[in-house]
Image (cartoon, rainbow, N blue to C red; front, side, top):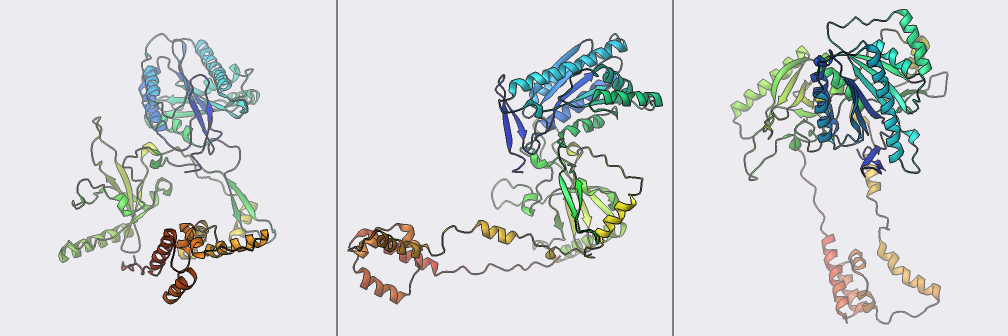
Length: 562
């Protein structure tokens, strides 16, 4: 996370606030949301859209780590075009954003219906006004060396009118406008079940849309979503994903084919599947702490010898093993095994062991997982139900289970990756198969065959910059310095000279044997004439006596292999 937290501040001359552009999300665009709150559709979509927007902003405002939404602005089109929210930072602005959502919620759903031409003009004007506001904001907040051309904006239009008609209207209305800073224009059509299938284009309409899009010079997308809170949350959560697109994220290097010495490179992009609970400050119990058994157990309050109740996980569902996607599991796994607690009597321990064995056998034979839920330890002060965490329990061939946290709806990011119905190209298939045929194959993966070079790295970080015996260097430096300066005079009192040396030099000197220490002290040093000399000798003997004691080996683990 350290790389994600490096931010480059841009100072606002108007408000004095800081807009943070993360180094890992440097090209995240600003966001403009334009909502068509027109009768009669607004009465059906108002609550759904406002609830989804409030849920999304509650999450986006609370996230640590990279800045995913640097700026947000909100327009509403009802009886008149209105800017409900000028550009503001999302992070840390939850109160202001919630008040804006309440203002949007208060727009009446009943009233006179304006003509399509008038409504289309308002929509076009809202897009142009929002782009102009963005240019002015960037102009005032950019410093001298920062080019505003590096910053882009995406406009999302939410409507209940037929989506293709809105797209054609915007393409024609914006054809001659200045859209340099506009990265993308998305039209989101909210439909009900009765309206689905009534907006299929004709071939003539499709041809016209293609020509207008090419003339517009920007990307205009249409997305139809169901009139539900979850569907609208999915649209908004796409804003939290990395939107750079300037370069590929990683290169997969395959072995060189037999007929070509150059390795095969597959260029890829990465996409987040979920928001880690670790990015939520004062993280509630969402199952993120599985790094050790101590982290997983509930926190004990009171005296240290107070008996700690075990964590209770309630089984709420069985899951088909082939129906669980690994991308929704996160965190470090914990191995679950039957208890060996000495406080249980022998009969209870044996009965518990048999139950655990039966559970493992049943799950494995039926290819099932278990979905578990941890009830919140306490209710929230606002009267809410608290936060629940969920886990998946997987069987293994040994007498053990594997526990992993599973993401909940709130932290799930959109990911639409349909299965391709077509076969891969023949030449590409031949190349990839030739590359993979050169690799060794293991039937059972053994992590002992992998080495990360971690030990060498840790030793290099802990290496001392000084020589192993610096006292020899220090003892030889005065003689060499005197010889270089032509000074042949030696100190008259060696004992006093040693006594004036610093404490570090005395404590690191190697300890001679007891007899040589006594003889050398009496012959060369003589009775120490100064307090400083006595102090140096005391330090020397005390540190040396400590160096003679070597710690013994720690206790060996007697745990059984799982």
